[in-house]
Amino acid sequence: MRVLGLTGGMGMGKSTVAALLRRAGLPVFDADAVVHRLQAQGGEALPAIARLVPNAVRNGCLDRAALRQVVLGQPGLLKKLEAIMHPLVRRERARFLQHYRKLGTPWVVLDIPLLFETGADHLCDKVVVVSAPYWVQCRRVALRRRMPHAQVLRLIACQMPDARRVQKADAVIRTGLSMKETERQVRRFIRSLRA
Image (cartoon, rainbow, N blue to C red; front, side, top):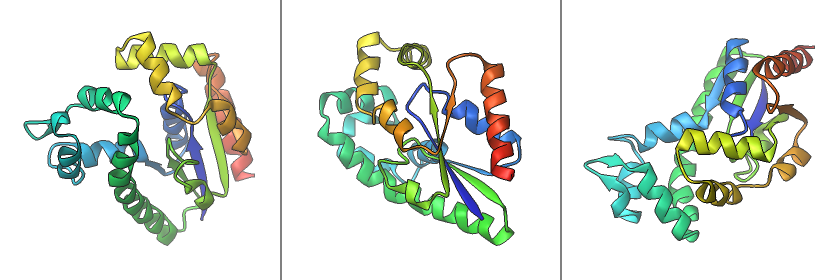
């Protein structure tokens, strides 16, 4: 079994590319979905988050906007949250890989926003980075998260720069043009994997 790492900053179109890969028959481990499940009501990570940032958990539910505000105001807090989340996500990723290895699946995808930052790229045979122009990224994040432009810029600044991700990639899928163009690039990339 071979492993494809898929990564990109927020608002780059990574979820769209992951959906296209999934539609083409590649199993996809979605780290964001795992995080949401772990942080949902009754989720395994919620008690530790509540101890760390009590104001971010109300009535047994994570208030993501409140958590984001606290993290933006206290940059050191992000590392503490990652120390809670990363081991739990790694465990789920190991289960995913073990399952598809047993099945003899030719390729699987690890869709991980912090692929390079967590060292998960070392598990991958190839890494594809999803990229878009900065102004497109800002617009997408602002629309999706319904937040002011200044806050969007601060959030993006917390992530690894796009140019650095692109430099580390084996391949880049650019999503700033049209959906049709993104689909064309993904089809071409899948053909190259299967060749």
